[in-house]
Image (cartoon, rainbow, N blue to C red; front, side, top):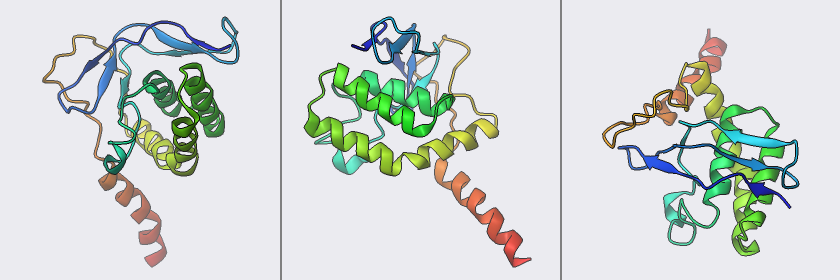
Length: 167
């Protein structure tokens, strides 16, 4: 059976939504001790599960699936595997954590159906020079993530092809 390599230790940032991984954390895919291992970089910024606020009473951003959410966030940021594989690992990791099927399946299908937006946003952020891995671990509660606002960036990116067509 798969396993997480250590406990997850995080510290919050001032925005109230972002947390920083403070020590080594990873996941063995498939079986414990497998050669297929995911190591989350120390200093990585995560928002745990990206659940819309409307559903927080049923599925909060942090729950029994929290560790799996961090692994999934890392896979979406690093993009070293195809998106479908990252989502399958998320499903597997929730199973390792004992997340009930009534929660696990909807969360998996939500990332399959809507995760493309986050995948694309991460590509844009990396292209713009933003790094979700903080090089300094001198994180204080007044530090913000520094991540650009998504809606503005997406609108600008989508408007480029339209402007070219209009010319």
